[in-house]
Image (tube, rainbow, N blue to C red; front, side):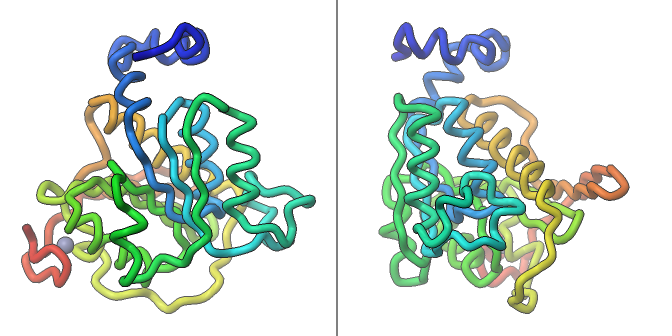
Length: 243
Ligand SMILES: [Zn+2]
């Protein structure tokens, strides 16, 4: 049920015919896990908080560093040295005190992933490495919940929405982990890709089509191009077996 305050706060999006009160109610009920409170996570968390996603859990094990501040807009100079989840939760609760926001300072591993995702209706991939992305990919296949993938490199960003059983999984399209290193990133790129991921989450939970399912969106902010590439299940996929 939406309160009078909800109706006022979310008025401009409730007015969208395809979204409406029903969309807002469904978003209010959803429990969304944001994996990573960095560049992508900042953008995703701000927009989902503003949009009224009812239950948000943010997972990150790192502390804020000076070199994060070119892109991780949830964290400010005063937060350097503080845990990213504490810094994120502090800002987000000031933006919207009507929703439930939980921060978990933990590194996602094969051993804890299923308990970290307990009760989640969807997971947003705001990570910076493929090793952990693949752990989440396998977990969401097991739990049969959607996975909203995003990744950035320099001026380029990518996003796709993975629905177990319906779309290719992350490992269908990226069979092996690229080498782990600190990649160069133009600060605005995760802002754009995170906004796209948050839009996908809102659309998914309010039943608005079409989604980025079976499609990889490739965005280039240097030349301002958006490409939609059709992606297919890999029958040999070690994670989903092309299911
Ligand atoms: Zn697969």
